[in-house]
Figure 1 (cartoon, rainbow, N blue to C red):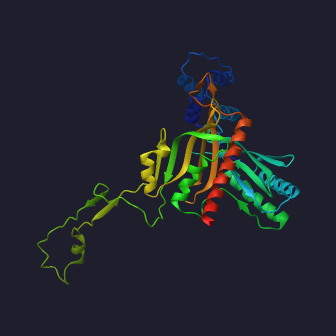
Figure 2: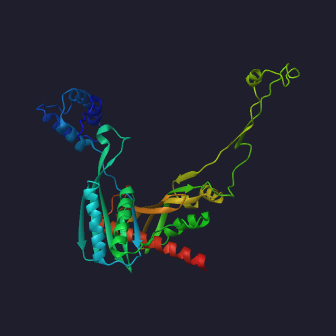
Figure 3: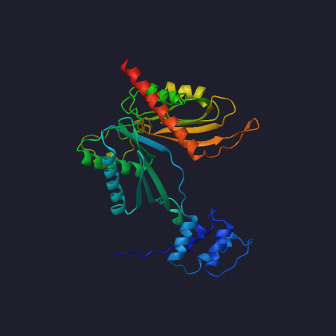
Length: 390
């Protein structure tokens, strides 16, 4: 059974007063009703007039297209399937995932094959109820790429719940076509709880980018796990607030005995317990220049904090090349897994100067830089594992 829906006047008013709605788009909205407006007309006045009209499905659809939520760039992640599986088996498994997306999830999905590369493209909607009514539905596109890597297959896609749902379904289908349990390899230090090793992962990662040198670290985020037995808390007077007990004297203390009134006893004011309020910081972020070598970060690491996110700039070793801004993080800070990364932008070099603002890297360059970052992350993890086995 279908459902009926209509937007309130306020929802339409809020949609028409969005900053993202241009004057040309607003004119088009009114022209759909045969109304011509002036460029000098007040936006709120126009929105108020239009919201008072009658509206139909097409009005709602057009407004959603104009002011609907925008699909922002997401970080990239990857996982390697190490189980032996042929290209034909993987194609069959991916096709089954596509059918699941179309039939069960009611989403658009397509599978494309180019040589040893398989690509699944999914178009879906994400609901965000925290946004204004006409911005709650975001049209999103996810590309999941599978390509041969050594004896396994690398799966690359956006770090979000949709990618996790797709890969979980893919693993199930691979197990069906191969009759084997799926084994995977990811960038994760979940099995290594040592704070020093975890924080050194990101410190080493930025220096393992092949052919590039670090220019600066501009943003770091740290995490302090709650289950540390050696947690070095600050118990000084400044961090410890003590509320002294308040005692009440009673003239009837000597008269009350076993035969006293229980209700009266309960009604008497009781001494307040001493309360200790301990200040504890779980997360801390630092932004600026040279934050990786700052005194503040050293102090945090000395108290058991470790890095879980880092943003830095780097460039090719020959002088005069563009400066690239990267960001890498572990989405699950406690377990130190869900590793993802992004090329934030490029500072172009022109006439001996770098641009003040970054621009998005060209697709070919962006893909090249992502591969370097993946290789650097894998090398860093391999180095850590070798050092632990030595």
